[in-house]
Length: 95
Image 1 (spheres, rainbow, N blue to C red):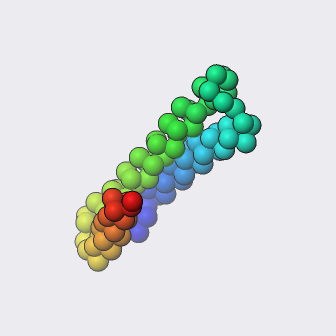
Image 2: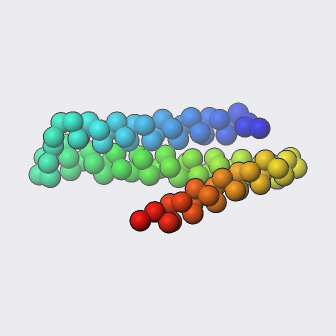
């Protein structure tokens, strides 16, 4: 059911997220601490890229739900909503 624009957006979101995680991993491996410029500049950039990647994945998920409603694939929409709801509840109930 994924269309070309959703696939490109999802791939772009994954690329941005992986880039952010790579920057954070590089900072961890290098052992940089607070006063170092690598830590002070790299950490906010890595976190921002991870956040933007997560937001883009949520947008892709929402677009898939709306596209399923438009194409009258209601079972697919119900499955997506149930899985999203279970994931959201699992995150909220985590200690």
